[in-house]
Image 1 (cartoon, one colour):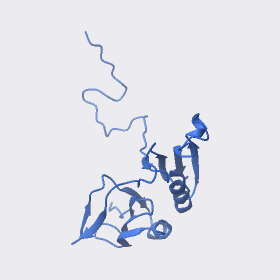
Image 2: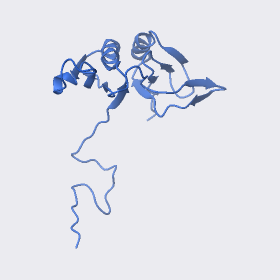
Image 3: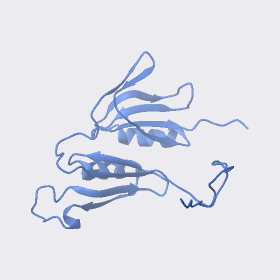
Image 4: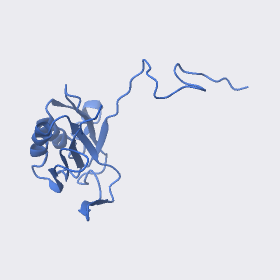
Length: 174
């Protein structure tokens, strides 16, 4: 006999879009090969907030061991809702965050990367500020400009190998 546990707000006939008391958030977790600290500090300078960083040495690795200063847990979180986490993958010193390329051809995005980080703002002015800071040392894939679906859309790959999409939320009609 199998006992089934039914959680509140689940089960047959439950509408997953129905409002519940539960809430979840997603946070992008980036994997680096020794650059997590620099990346987190850079993202904190771009989006605000501060970087929280713990090293492998902080969690018991001998301080003189190779990789003890690498990041085992790191994050940046702002009051505006921006969140990102990162760590250094053990044994991957010198590897980039992502292996691959992204480019635009004939109005299409061509990539072999498994994901992009997307940041959406309410105004073009807000997004332009983030774009200007994030673009330092980056390769611009698509310049920030008006598009068919947004007052501002742009794509770039930062100096750490992470591809970002920045855009402005389109006005919704009533």
